[in-house]
Length: 215
Length: 215
DNA sequence: GTCTATAATGAGATAGAC
DNA sequence: GTCTATCTCATTATAGAC
Image 1 (cartoon, rainbow over the protein chains, first blue to last red):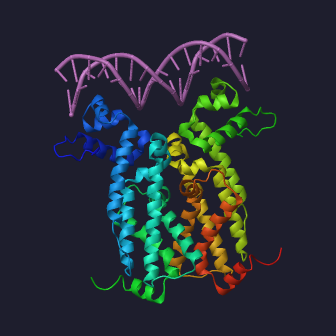
Image 2 (tube, each protein chain N blue to C red):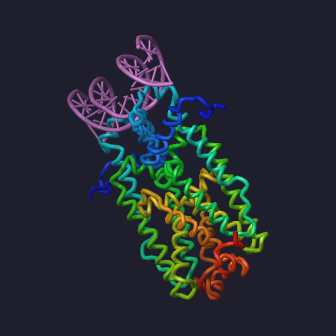
Image 3 (cartoon, chains in turn blue, yellow, purple, green):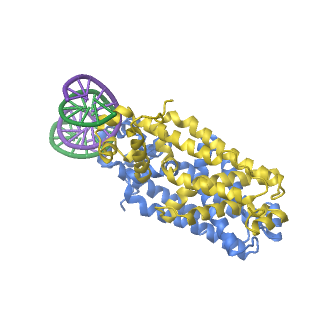
């Protein structure tokens, strides 16, 4: 594997990535110099360049880690008749977006520094939209929501927009600098609010009861 | 005035700003060098620095122009009983956001290069939200929409998010490079779709008729 | 794998002549 | 107001010793 996941590998590479993630989240990739990354780690810049020859490579490695984590929370999720599973997914997604918020907040900068990621970011975004579509199809099949195809498509697009930009919304409009569980729940509620008008009586009953069948 | 609006003023300053707006929209403020701006204008970098000592000052002047244009489309708009006026406002807003899209797409970069704009950007965002709130109050007073305060507040937030990020959505998910009337209409439809479930019978009748009273 | 140099770059900024 | 010439400086990047 091209990854630093092999057994006896020294962990400097992983430490570098962890520090990058933290610093990039704080001030954005363009505002963090290689000198600062090295200093934070207590290693030399030359050493840093042994592991990553360019900042671009750090961004690529970080994106791969992000991809893996995203894949993990989406994997094999079945929504079926339980809307709380969708809320859980949303909260998991929002939490991840917070941990990797520089990808969202500094999207243009990331694109500038690592143009090679463009296609992969697009693909990730496709997957996100597909995931929303899948969840909606499941809820519709289970008789929880209903509406014309046009209405539901519009809801899907709005749900994608609100969830994708939620973290940035918190930052720009509410000066949120550290996300809490409440912020995530709030975001999930905003998205779920988009569906509320399209709930069937059965969907409303279950939503009101706070979830599906016990356990 | 500190502006280049005085009568006999040579227009180099205005030409600089126009070129900046174009180039920043194309590739973002961080990706456009002062050398390139000067070259595009066919003037010398030294001359450029006669007009703007720092890139930050260009951004501030551009933001002021944006503010003025935004103020013009929002000024004294009364929504009352005609929902189409709101749609018109939305389209005007989207059009402006397209013309100044670098402020949205490169928000983090703008903040980095011109930290002094932070408060004014926040204030502009406040005004946008207030404008949405005002429009909703007007529609509610006219008996076009109805809902609990919580529902309407959630709709308001979602409307702000979808409208603010609509231009960026088009760019990232649909690779839109030149905006058309259709894109603006589509965006307006997405936002209006947020209100649709809360229309009163009277609101539905008017919306279906495609607007208010003739003329 | 890690360090100490040090080179190479290129952007932002300025002084002063015209 | 505009130009030429120059400067500063942060950042990226590399060579080579340990």
